[in-house]
Amino acid sequence: MENIILIKEEVNCDINTAFKCFTVNELLESWLTEEADIYPKLGGKYELFWDPKNKQINSTIGCKITGIEKNKYISFNWKGPVDFQNFMNTADPLTHVIIFLSCKDNDPHKTIIYLFHTGWRNDKEWQKARNYFENAWSKALQGLKEKIKNRAIH
Image 1 (cartoon, helix red, strand yellow):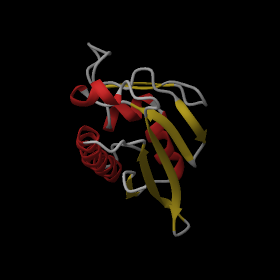
Image 2 (cartoon, one colour):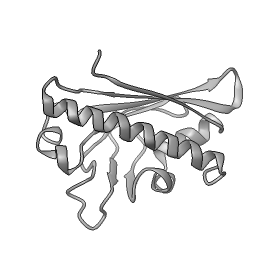
Image 3 (cartoon, one colour):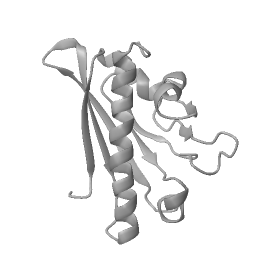
C-alpha cells in the first residue's frame, strides 16, 4: 500500500465537466497531452501522445480502459516515458490509474478528484519512476485546476 500514489485535488466545476476532462480527447489535449485517442468504454483505448510525430515513445499506446462509470470513475493501464520505458512499458501487469470523482459538500459546482496510481514495484528504478509520476500527476492536476479556474475548460 505504501507504493500507491494518491493525489486529491478540488476543482471548481461540476462532476460531468471533471469527468469529461479525462474522457474527451480535446479536453485531455488542453491540459495533459499533445494528442489523445480515447474511446470511453470498457476495453476502449486510452492512448495519450506527448510526441505525436513518434507515437511509439512518450505515449500510453496500447493502454486500455479497465473500468468506467460516467461521472463517477475511470480506470486505465499506464505506461512510462522514455526514461522508464525499458521496465514500465514491458511490465506485466502495467501500472494502473484510477480517477474517482465526488461532489464536495453536496455543492454541484465543486468536484474532488482522487487519482490513484498503482502497480509500483520495489526496486530503485521503480522508485525513481514512482517519484517522477507523483510529481507529474500533482503538477498535471494543478494545471487542470488552473485551466478550470480560468474558464479555459467548461
